[in-house]
Length: 403
Length: 163
Image (cartoon, rainbow over all chains, first blue to last red; front, side, top):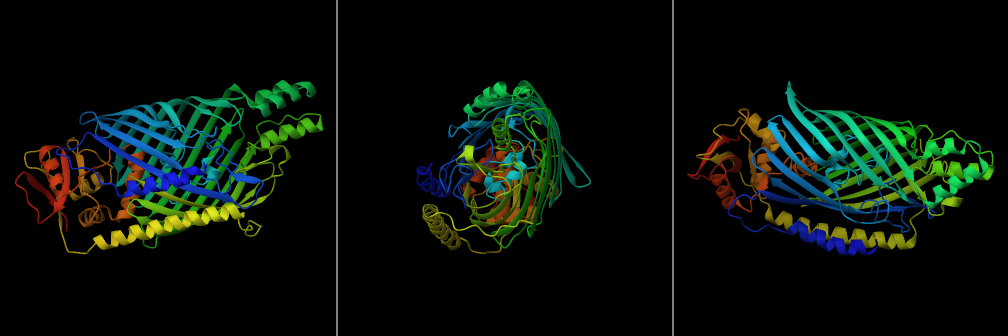
């Protein structure tokens, strides 16, 4: 990853000043893109910052993996009432690869001016800011607060959704039902599915205020196949009478999850206020948890300093099963702790829009990991990790562009 | 609430890399800002919204224009679909969005990037200059664009003059 920044910066600057050739007619095809060059450094040498299930735990410090991303998008008009959109994104994934993936690939049709039907691949719309998770230029932070946005690491759904717009008393309302499936590869082997994910989002927007409410339900499968899980599995079978019950809590294809979110955003050009609450319940394979974040920022010309408070809390663990053998029980608890994201944090940051399509962001984050958790950090030596109740500082810097 | 104090400085290799990174970025930013400042000058202009003289769009209210330039509508009240033509970044474009939406150029860019990269709204077509915008507007019966009110074209009609 270390070679990436040197190669990427000249490319980003070239894109900033590029100008298109003259065309005699309006083109039916539009090309656009976005990119972030971002680094994050942790203040303690035995841990690395990670966006759980999104990027690969890095060895470098600072690490350019969690936030650096580039995306390109094509938009093709198909007559006056339909269009196709394809968006490819390259970022470090959980396997450590930068292989581009399609996060948008759909055809949209508008049978009436207020209704859009989309079929194909679209963003998992669980959060208020789901559409812009990778488009950091559109957000004030380097990245959306991990406490909230790590509750769902899935990026896309393959399926169908509807976007219905109406207006009531000057309030613009979007009603967004959706249905689809998705799959995600996970670090250390295995994959996770959402099958028949269905949900409904309602967004109300006025000139300065946006209110969001969403709820989703989905069948859920999680299959671990990494060495640590295989070792845990064989140790449990050898030592623990209820090994099958514990393993059925951790891995399988009989899960069911619900996801709910409430959000609000105020931006009057002077003050920026953002708040979001989300809650995950899961019958198996992942813990029940809730999370919230609040952000307050103040615009000073092209500068936007801000503060964010955030917290992720586990409501119930993945499994309540225990092993009678202390060493095996310790391994089991370490396995589940690495997947518990509970922490709270305060972030101080600023955004500087130094060019018409580019922003520089600097952030300082102070996180405190809660109880039996690894939070948004990964131990470089997992077998000897002591993560519980630690406080960890990170600094981050990024340049975001759109083109 | 959070009890530990500021962490010690990052390890030396990290600090060196961070210094190089910030240095490069700040140099680039300073260069680009000075370039931008040199090209911007304040002059008093008025903007009018225009469409093809023989096109499908005959009238437009300021409220409709605001909704369309915020990407909240892609058609008029009678169902006529609309294609937006943007001028390149500059004084006319800034004035148009400030008057219609109350947003400055930075806010407009961030706002539209949210819409465009969600795939929900087709971004406005950006012409390279006023001449290209006039050609596109004249040839596309569903296009709405904007020009300085001092610019008139027999192939175009004025839908709305902004205050």
